[in-house]
Length: 301
Image (cartoon, rainbow, N blue to C red; front, side, top):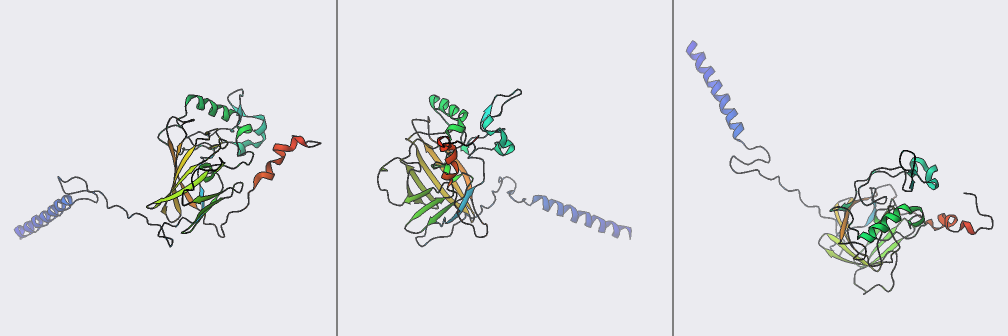
């Protein structure tokens, strides 16, 4: 009887050891059998956007950036205001914005510039610093001037892409700005302008827009980042999810920067019920700022 019990116990122990050995010999997920190296996970299938009649990706929709790039394209910490003055224990808001309190403060941002800081030439870097110090006087956004490209795409307002097989048009809520995107190059822009001249082509899933013909008046953000009339922007719009566009813009301006540089960010589709571009034609909102001093009896500050 004892020998039979012993044989049963030995058989059970042997079976358990065998199961453990077998389990440890099996590769874990993402792991190859011994001596063969790791097995990479199976790649997720690439997203393929819906198509229009011409078989190009459908980019139609109302889109908006959700970041702090309009304050400053580069990484930045929170601060009490964009316009500052020296205070007893550090910078405090300038008198003109003091009453705004937290509403006039600058939220922190991770930055959208790839590959390091914006590569200004030395004399241009000095002008950028001066622009920042004189933000209240110089930022074209304050006076409701057209935002330019690429800034129009990451201001805190939505914009709409209208796309068909024969035309592409962009309408921006801010200041009623618009862009007619040429699908055939009409040649050099007849005149320099705030929004430039845009010429598009497709490269697989990506809409590439080449933009030239700018004036030198727009800024890239509220921190004084600027350009000359030699600005050349190449944008790339790629629909990477049903409600997300990947946006990239390569910026070249040999008068201002030592080399081309790039920004990138997601743009999100507005899914609000009845979403639409509404009016924010802010010209009349700044008439008092720009022309109020010419009143017979100017308003008190």
